[in-house]
Length: 277
Image 1 (cartoon, one colour):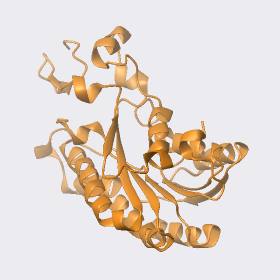
Image 2 (spheres, rainbow, N blue to C red):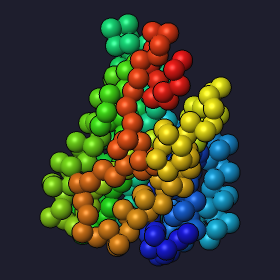
Image 3 (cartoon, rainbow, N blue to C red):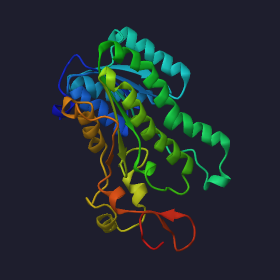
């Protein structure tokens, strides 16, 4: 599991939202590769459990408890980097994101929700990247991997603001990659879909639908697992991807290539599971 992450016990990897789901899988994967993981998460208990897993796998873990959408948490992350890693960051994984809070369609949404979605999906990507880039420039290299979504590249009715911010993450990835290439810093992103995580459990996504529908909905025939995305993130941060930058790679089982959204026959919302409901 550690090969893609370039086993190197001196590497320092910052993972935001690094306790559960894709972020937890990223923390564990880099930990298994022997890295020093600086894990930022608002869920203290889950973060402590993941830190135990990282250390049991042979890595080192520093916890920064707090909401990375808040200035104070970003400041404490900077202090942890200086104090625990002597200012060094080799890899940054901007993982935090959420489609909530949301209320139905855009014209019924509230500007307060837009601001919260902005902090959850875009602002912290700017803030944490801005925090670590100077140290990467000073060291002459590094890798940033952002977590976007396939919804940045297709319509997602009912989540228009979320998709706009995630599209901005991919646009930011491209432009920042061009800016930082001269310093040996690579910037890429992944775009997951249908990941079976605590935030989007498979049982909730499937609901009362026939599980056999997955074969027609997802070309690879299953929901994604957190480590599916973590493996691609580790690859993008590794020397194997040394000539890749500015890219957003879908990790979606083929859904972006194959699927669309459908209005329910009941005229009550939309579905990307064409079950006729």
